[in-house]
Image (cartoon, rainbow, N blue to C red; front, side, top):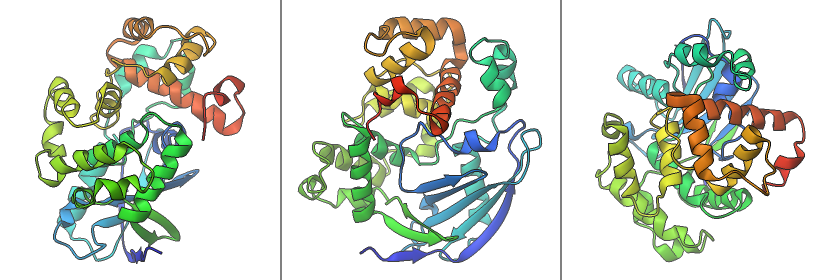
Length: 335
């Protein structure tokens, strides 16, 4: 049984996202991979965070617990953020942390131009009216997102969840804060010291090699996420595609979720192809619209906001599924 790290030090910070900001659809994405480092209830999200600023800190100090509380309204948004740590954080560390959180959760994005352009769109307009200013969210670091991308490759969501749980139990940290026990990611160098055979024993299959190889450039400081953010989208794409085991689908998700390129939609996976065909063409998933036709349609209809627009419509579908069964969708989900 993994020893639980208790995060007993607490700091409370106020964050004001740019208005408008709907808290729940911005902070909880039912369509995202269900990872064991987070949990949510209406108006509140708990999330762990491995914070590399503590590279030389004592064991467990690199793990933070975050609690986001909705303390405002859509038009006058305010978030009360509780930060839990093993040892008291310095003011400099807190300032750096808040800058990072603002980036990952896209709190300071101004989506007024997007909303104005599509407010009368027959399909997108009602969602914009319901969720004006909904943000793109990526709570994990680039490295952590890549790990999740690898475990999602070529298998059911159910199996991916089991693989991620096995990785957390063996290499992550179990932390306790605010009455929650959640796992926190490991630093990249951890997997570089693990044999491929040991990883395969966790039933991750061929992904064992990918997990080790993807960890190496991060552990060796060959890739710096902050520096990568300053590069152009095509430079980012080239660097990401050079990573072992990472294909165009995963790169597309990263360019949108992690690096906030709202126009990044250059690949559609077969699974998404079936769902998009139903959402946008009312075509049965068993007879999907071609990827080429979908991409041309998105580009013409949504232009430089194409992935952001699709994201709104996609999330609306998954939120509906939270409250009602959608027969055509259930057959495509194996969780």
